[in-house]
Image 1: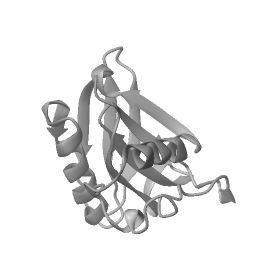
Image 2: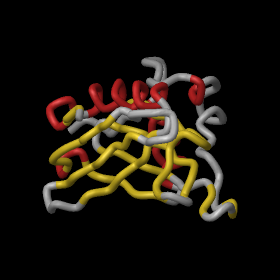
Image 3: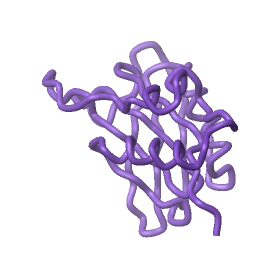
Image 4: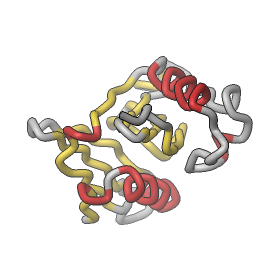
Length: 150
C-alpha cells in the first residue's frame, strides 16, 4: 500500500467560511483524505491560525498543487501541520458527493457540500469566483467521480 501524499490546497482568510460568522477556512487534499480547517475567526474573535506550509516546503502556500519534488518526509510533515488546526477531515473512501456551486453574485455565496456515505453533510461557503475555480481544480484531482457541479 502506498503512503499518503499531499495533493494540494489553500487557505483564504476572507473568501472561504464555515458559517455566517465563522470566517477564514482552508481546504486541503491528500491521496486519502479531504481536510477543512478553520474558522480563523468566529463572531469577530480570532480563534486560530493558518497552516504554515511554507516552513516545510518554501513557496507551497502560493501554489494550489504540491510540487512533484516533495519528499515522503515533507508529505508527512505537511499532513501533520494540517492536522494541528481546528476543522474536520473526511476519508476519501467515505465521500459520496462533492457538490459545488459557483457564487451567484457579488453579495451571495456559493458553496462546497461534502456528503459522506452515512449521509452527513458539511458545507464550506465560497465568496468569490477565484476560490471557486481553485476548489474545482483541487476536487477534480482529488475525487472527480464524486464531483457534482451545480
